[in-house]
Length: 168
Image 1 (cartoon, rainbow, N blue to C red):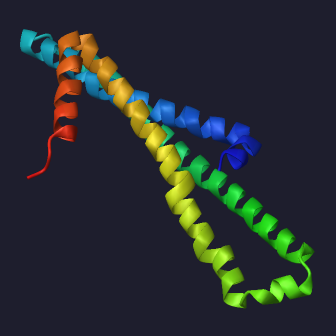
Image 2: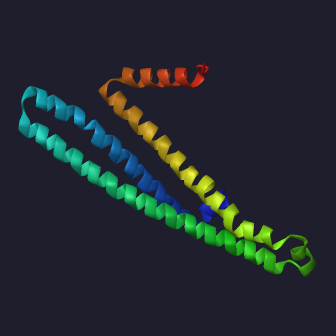
Image 3: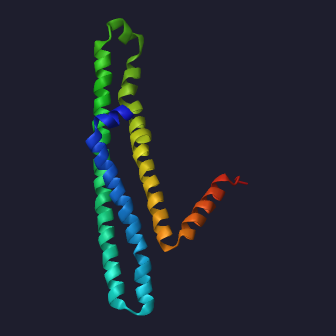
């Protein structure tokens, strides 16, 4: 998998940057609700409206980057799939007749269809979604620590407790 991502380095970087922008703008737009609420409690409607408009702007950035991320991720996955299909076809084409006929035709069809679909769905998409989830976690912890460092610490401790506590 690594070799294919390195062959498509620019496209992979674009997907990562869009994932970064998506996750950062999501957390920022959510975090801007706190100062907006504070302004509303103080009765300062113009400041409240300003924070809400800034939050809406970050929500628009989030939606645009989410769309761009999905489009670019699917393009990258398709490029890699086409490349893998080409490599499989080249290997089959270079093999001698007796080697090719050792396997049934359905095995080759499986390589071109279901095996590659599993790689697309359970390989590359899951990898980039996992990286995006990690980014979201980091941004959320940064956001919590901007309110108070104790919130981030307590959140991590509770998450670890939930993770390691046996399910009964």
